[in-house]
Length: 503
Image (cartoon, rainbow, N blue to C red):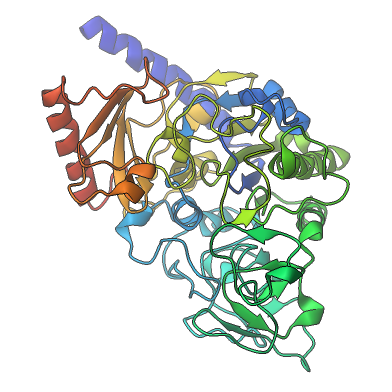
């Protein structure tokens, strides 16, 4: 045992100087966040009906992680965890937000972008935000703050919430882009404002039908969640969103090529409504959803091309991942189920978006940094919540005891220098938590679980899976392993009740 401990100590000591030397280089960091991209949606993760050559190329020249996770099976909580290093279930109000919600990140708390800014990075948030804006009463016709600028970003160009929610406008820093003062914006999530038709009133005006919800104000032939009037000159065109935000991302890179930068690029694709630009429509073999995955891959390619053109690619760390797993019918009648053509967004995993099963949070996670990372594959367990502490180690920034309470430093794993990631991980779906510890997955039983909860993987009885033998979570081993169920249940409660889980 003494010899074994000595071996691991020597191995760890051997890794440390290498990681320290790499960290001193302060690479540019580009974090590309897809929306609802499933584990099986990308070519390098097994997709055949959808082509993702740009992501696949990054995977070939870098690392493809097979056990990487968002913290949650839906968007807002995953984004909150990424930027704060805190499990979202610790804080009330981190569920899926309406489009007029107030900012849920306290500007006084440490954040990932603020930490990088302190390290000398220029920082930008471009694309989907969905973490709230303002202090609780937003006037979209005036300055809109606090927001990304107040939590550590130097520049922001935002889709305020989701594209299926109003207001359907871009916000640059603190202002709506292109707003005509003579046509002020009104937004309400409780009652109708203005006289524009809704999807419920005039389904005949829709270019995309509905399956559930999304029946409020019609904008660009698509009805949304929430009511909006005014701001006609500022409204986006859905089919152009990928082009607009990708161009802004490229411009940020061009304008900050001389200094290290951090780009948080969060796309709308592949979230509903799925409205690919005409040049992508019909290009996949899996309907509109496949088309917008390919549109997302194009955005990745445009960013990579700009880095190469500016000779920044060798010393830029790129991460491509998703905020949660994939989903099919999410409110619009866009034909995705009938057009799947054999494609499975979850690949070999069970569940998807909103689910506590693996496909809810296990997502594609590709890391490329040609100057420092050798090509390969990693089975290390890690979470996007770890990026706060990991990037802090990368750029030699110390974080306070109170900051990033659940973020592990997994830099050796991220760089491919170690197969060891985090020791445990708490996945979250609809405010229900499950514990990953090694290859074991424990989902506690919920006495009040009903049919709706069961669809998300939440049952009345506990569930236990050995993912090393049962990746699809088909064989519940809880009944035959009562001691392990007890131990994991106690561990989950211990972690949930602790003020922090970071070592």
